[in-house]
Image (cartoon, rainbow, N blue to C red):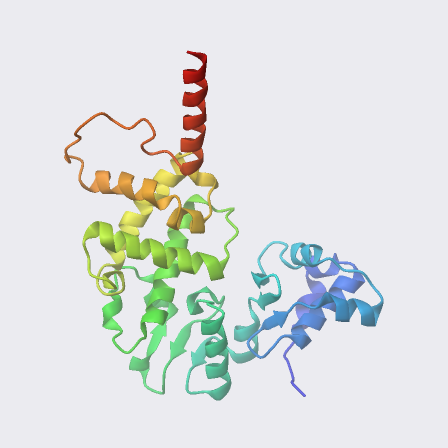
Length: 288
């Protein structure tokens, strides 16, 4: 039988006391039923059937995440309890520890960046100090990631992802992050930036983190100033909207590039805006 630490001060916190009793019990239920990495497979039918109550997953998330995020939605069927690892095992993850390694493998499989785990201070690959990365080091964007030659590319990119999200959230503080999708989007964006800059594949992980974040900051500023782009998700920005973004940023990088021929009136427009432009032009031509 698994044993879990619980916080007795929970009964002094308003967010918990203000919940209906069935949701308070459900909070304890997910703490007991989640796996050893803090990942809960959503199954309200079992809980509601046992307790003869009706619960809404959306209401539960709203109540649990009052004032701060306590539960992260990974998929419609998987939730991640934010403080679980640190509360159960402490602020250091040691990959040589069997339980810690199992948690790390689960986080890798579910694409949960280690740097996004609240309270995690250090990740160790072994017993030697040189085999660890501290969160303090991760926070120093001037520190080249190639210093950590022992660290895998996946773990390096989790650092890049967190720094890109920091830049993005400074402008879009209300953005609801979806790490599963957003980490893929940031990886695509980083790859696109490498192409624009003429870097080799993987250079953003080795010596160009500062340059990447400077460029990304300019992209985010441009997005924030555009009425259409600022409503798009990171996935949209990395795919169907990237052509527009890439063209704009390439021009910013090379403002003296020649501009031959007549300017395309749809240049810089999103696909949606281009469709509207075509329909308006067709309507005008029909009237004339």
